[in-house]
Length: 382
Image (cartoon, rainbow, N blue to C red; front, side, top):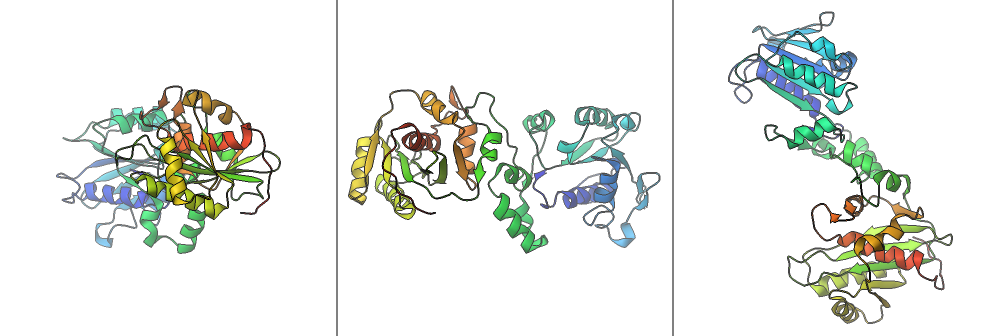
């Protein structure tokens, strides 16, 4: 179970342990007699998994609650089921004991994750169907990746916001406004595994280090449009990205309004609306595939909008490289979709094989702002 902070992972793990220990119909056909509970440290296992507000002791009714012996690190149920508590700091403590079930909490944070996991697997040798449950906020560690790729593993995902009714509204509002869409937020709130492609032109660390909450006064703003080659609903998305540049030559990615499944007049209207709202200086439109039609459609929507046509003479990777090496680009706020494309784009394109429509539009915008001859500026506030 991959989940964000406060998403209910501990409660889920505790309920699962209760269910298998008491042979609840939805959890097990036979009661698990010997259960391993493994936390990042013994203190974490005790304070969170066992004694915590969502831990094992708190979710049992009084008459079925197990007896907790901290000195022995052991829980004993009235029906004879026993759970032993272990720390991932001490993998060798799992040598010798044997179990028919295990709950591993916050696996991605374990100090000796591979060694502890291996020792646990050797100990899961009792009963007809040994099982284990992992509850963790994900990180892109090799073990998590292997588990996700294993067809024998059932995967559940939950976001922090899914558990909103059990969280303080002020906390949820504050944390979502601050982190939603950022790399940290997607990992810690959405439970996503976020990693970079090794040969990508962009890295998330660099993007994160240059993220801004708002843009300063800008000298020039453009909205770039990367039109799809056809108008069918199955065509590529229409990339629509706004960016600006300040007087020091620092560029700011302002908004990603990329649209899918829209007819040409609709995405043209969307691009023009963004141009108007940001009081931009021009629309930048690629004319390689369907671009001449795109400029015509935009003029039909609003003939007063200045349109600058651009034509690709090199491949996407070569066009993107001069922009990616600039350490003068800041992302304003959270732009998760475009950042996913940027960090997944290598010499062979995106790993999905799809067209990088958002990235293309961004590259055209930044090329116009940073790599072409500077035009007469006019200052505006955002």
